[in-house]
Length: 322
Image 1: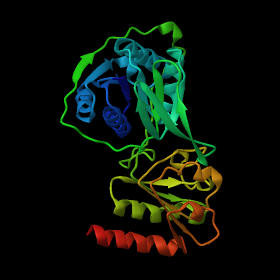
Image 2: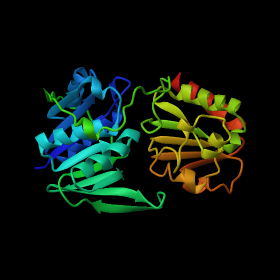
Image 3: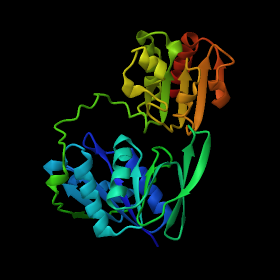
């Protein structure tokens, strides 16, 4: 029976959905599940993890962990790993997770597997499925050494709440200040109620065909109609044209997403963009060009003018939702 350690990321004073996903998956795989939460004033959040499969939650709480910085968090997570002695460590493949995963693996002198979309367990050994070649193929990968350190692409697994209440233990970590070369003074987070693209259930993206920043209002109207689990995305062309901030960019040089529904409006489907959406559950494409590459990847396609299609689609969603 494996010992699994889950790292629970905190943002804006809340545990991110990706942590609940990997905790749920860890519990489904079997074995003893521990979780680690690091931050300032986060002890009160720890109990939530017990509802999603964590049998024990280790809390590293202090002012030095108020803002994420690689070295302090690596030291803290490695310290907790030393207490737990896990055979597997799971992290979410968020921006923070992508930075922390290889760093903590290096500190523990083991390899890491990034951006996994499926997992199978044989004894204490995990086999991970991960995309390769911009999503054109998948590889089944095993990590040598113990612990195995893996990051999981958000939205790859569902969140399953159980009637559990994990034991909470506060852990004191003495940081080696000599290894800390930088200090993060503050983090500016965009003021938005919409979910991050990597964790959103529905994404409505606009590309070159949107033809101007002012026309993103059409996407915003549809997102509002679809509800609080929906958000906006964009192709690189729209970002390069400065119609929308880079934080919304989806693709190989932006964010990789796995929503339940991805709507692409005016996006032709360059390989750079397709690489970021291949694990979406359902893709809907809207474009005037019937030969646009996006249609080869779409589950549903609408050949038409997005300026006509989007308002009608918004109205239909409003009627369905009442």
